[in-house]
Length: 440
Ligand code: GDP
Ligand code: IMO
Ligand code: MG
Image (tube, rainbow, N blue to C red; front, side, top):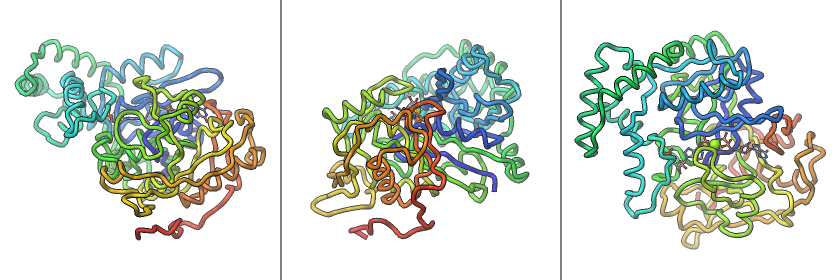
């Protein structure tokens, strides 16, 4: 079966982009299936840094098709800027990029609504969105009456459709929009994007049925999944593994391998509970060493210890077969490292990630302490050359999540990657739960 998926198991920024870039070598097609310009994926190779947002991280390699599916919300200005930026640095886009005509289009009112509504959750704590109009665009998609898909921009009815929706949006928001300017702007965007626009669902179905090797690139992280994450402090798409099919149109039966990507610790950008957050010198040390500032907004990321309760839940949710543990080098220099293996909630020990945000807020982490290491890891290239305590730390993550760690990353560069072959510890799959949930 032809499909591999890379999915983030935390709150995003797990270094999915780095892994996708590496795995692209073994694939023919790379697919973005959810999210939009809220994503910021970094690839570092040969001293050059690339920031990808809407375009799959496979674009840096030749001979690979990169597909943006209908599950993505597309800001045409953002994607055109990205195309221009890549082309100006010598990356070929023509003939490689396909963009779904089903993708919903972000309009200026979506960005305005995002900014207007972000602070208005009941209870007042903002989600802290990226401000890219993601939530409002997905809301209009589901609501249908105010939505415009990329394919609509090429229809003769588009001017009338746009005029109708602009008038309604102006009324709803109490803001004037210059419909003629927007129409002309989006006409130009449509012309620029025309060579890339197609029915990507049929393209991908043909591809998987022909046995072509397809790599699905998750955006965000599974804890930000709109249905299964820390709702309402989530994004507006199915960012976990469950979103692969609905976003791309490729049935799950074609997905052979799901790689769950985690940082060796936890980070989160924006609001919402994060049980293992270290708002102290530990968190600051991780932030400094990991350069933990958002790729899209440059906001400082909240940092904390590895949360195995949350990641085990998302590994199961996403059907993860194996784990890639990234940014392990950041943890050098701690005498001891903590891994959260359970929560205490109202005096009860819990190992299942709670479904309600209030329980996540009240969760007090139960930590296992593991010995740290002081060696720098950035030059290590073989699993056996990692300090023993680093190997123990990885093994414990694998045990708690019930999946083998098959990839370890010790720096941003492509070369700073260790493939564990054979995997350090194989678990049968599916395996019994570990540890047995106290609240089962
Ligand atoms: P993504 O959104 O999941 O693709 O991740 P981001 O690109 O937003 O954030 C990951 C950051 O970590 C980027 O700045 C990467 O260059 C960097 N990075 C990736 N792997 C490693 C690693 O193993 N060690 C260190 N120190 N940095 C890494
Ligand atoms: P990548 O793909 C980290 C977070 C935002 C906010 C919440 C909702 O780079 O891992 P949105 O703009 O989507 O409505 O914001 O989700 N968020 C991310 N955090 N990495 C991302 O993407 C994110 N995309 C959205 O910070 O808390
Ligand atoms: Mg990112």
